[in-house]
Image (cartoon, rainbow, N blue to C red; front, side, top):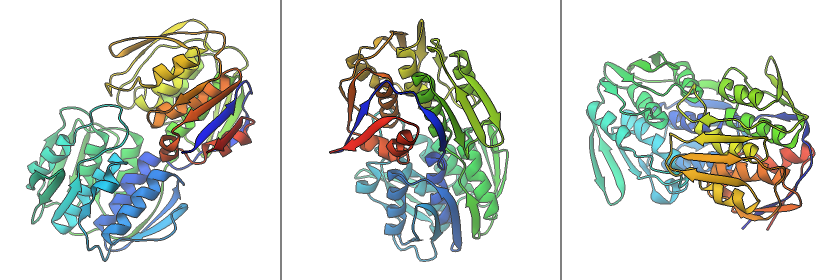
Length: 416
């Protein structure tokens, strides 16, 4: 099993290119199932989840070219309408093949999902939405089996905001008969990016980016070219790492307009931030100030940045409260941070972090994707060597993170 060895205490300096967004790439790759024509995607990130999704699509009969940076997907000869357990257990996003398969082929068999153990993320919102559109669905032997001659438009109101639920039903509705309205829909930029790709394929969608999305079904979709948006979570992770180490870095090929909540908190922590075109520069030459934060659906503070800011707060001046409202089990990194000397107390869904002048290196274990990034940041500021174990989580969602950090001056290497 691979690990990262980090020698802490080095300021990050330089420029880093931000990769395409994993959380946009995965649903957009699934959208290729909606057409028999070529879907050309550029700016695909080179990471494990993207390759896993490509393997899943290949198993179904989709022709996929090389995935790194760009690929062409052709679903003209799909011959297997199933996402098996061995593929889905490592990546919950595989549930996103359910809507496209059902909409175009009238049937889908998808294993109940796995992925990071950060809390309950039920698929009942997906199932109820498809049932409202006329699908017949049974849960059998750990699989969702859905059938429908043709889906029909419906008004669907989500009980809670669901990004993958919004994406799955939006894709399914593109080929449904009539108009589908999604209310209390997710507003995340990745949902907008998927909608833009679907529109380029001939879908009739309005309202993406708001809490009400309207989709008028069409008879078929065609091929398209689409560039995947930059990864806002990777952007935020590198900015927090620079702020924690007292560094100065510039992000290229990124977008500041989808990072408002993160940038506001970094400024509150004492960072100087300059935005220009598709670049963001952060300069931090002082000890950070502790910042309170509360996670909530976009455009509020993202749950996927909570762990990284927790690491920042551990060495900040003062104390801060971190409230997690999205996932009930997303404080698993706290115990590992304590091994480095962090002072954190947990009360329900709130973490109280008391900043300390320094952390001390130790061997720690990653528990999920964003916790992995949190522990890497902690290792960058800790005195001495930190070993981060179980980094396969990290490889699921970050493109060559140790190479990018090394280019910024970090002393970090991958070991077995």
